[in-house]
Amino acid sequence: MDCDGCERRVKAAVSSMKGVKTVEVTRKQNRVVVHGYVDPNRVLKRVKSTGKVAEFWPYVPQHLAYYPYAAGAYDKKAPAGFVRNVVQAFPATSSNAAPEENFVSFFSDDNVHACSVM
Image (tube, rainbow, N blue to C red; front, top):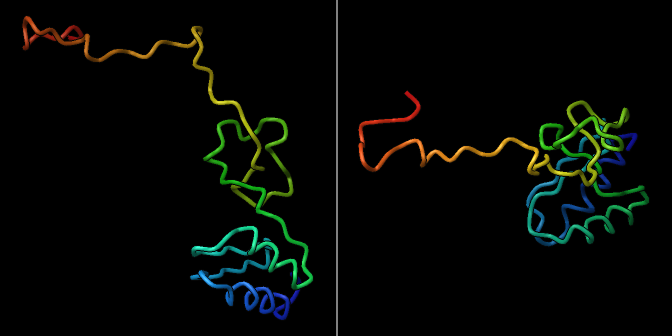
């Protein structure tokens, strides 16, 4: 989006849809955020009908990614604080990883005032 007219056209097209509560247009990031109960594919189709190129936002906040600097996730074109939304492996929980401590075993039923940590 380059001008106020483009921004108004997209905002008017999306806000007139049934179920849309609010529409936020960020021209600097070329992003439209829609809040409400509406089908995302219908919103995408409505934005495309205005003559603009539209796709789902490909970025997620950096703190939500397990490995934000993994291959394919880090993108120089991403806005500050965002990385590309890619499928990432979760942190390893194999037998090589440190076992989780069982805090129940620290206390004894025989002597309730004793603790094995002390």
